[in-house]
Length: 377
Image (cartoon, rainbow, N blue to C red; front, side, top):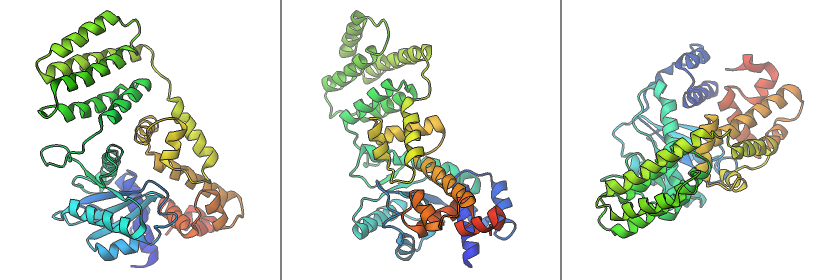
């Protein structure tokens, strides 16, 4: 396969991962490349690092993975800390494969490598949805840093349940309340309940103590809350003889919070505006989710979730998109060298910058400067 055809295939895959319509992908291919190869994938894996890996040390990882794991059909870099691996063999042991890849990368580069495994892919039109699913699955990384591989259904009867720290979940729910995000609050509360439902190894008193603390947090954020009513509800909670009763008491108060927050709807989260402004002003520097989260005093996973909810876009993808827009503008309106444009846009490795630009726009930076979009393969 010629390089020009390979570049076209990579951009088509990038378009599919970003939920472009199949008709747009077919139009881009101009009849040169069939979209048939995009219909054959069975599963996708998301490989993620906590720092800028691909722009610095991991430029050679693609070729190494193809050699040690020949069942990888396609590889696509998304940004400086994420890449996608595509597989056609539906019968592959994906958990074992992911664990093997993670161990290899960690041994080879000395960095933790986290991998999320998608559910079954149903053709080209489903690729973007599976990529979104992978982002959600990867959120489990926050709850268990010692785990490297994540997939849907890890919690359940498989004996591989991720144990979530009580303090972590309580902090998340308090943050949900602070941000008036009852959707995330319900999600974290469901996770909290899943940990203790039907578990006989936890004492009833301990469980009721945790849930009563939740009630106190709720009442602190309900205007004109009556402390006497709170004490009565806590008393009812401690007298409850079933877990479902305890849960219902808390759920009733989540509904009260929802009503409270709907009376005083919050404008777009100030924290998200701070994050976006920082990206606009520092896109030429190294930017990590952890660093951004520290600036707005939020947990990295929570910032990612809120950012996606507010903007409709994954945080890492947002950073890359803004860098690509700035790079395109510099190519169109300056005579700076390609390497200098890459540096200005946060890419210290010019080869990585060129490949990222090509994946994003379907054309190399040099050809874009010379011919514009008409120069695309």
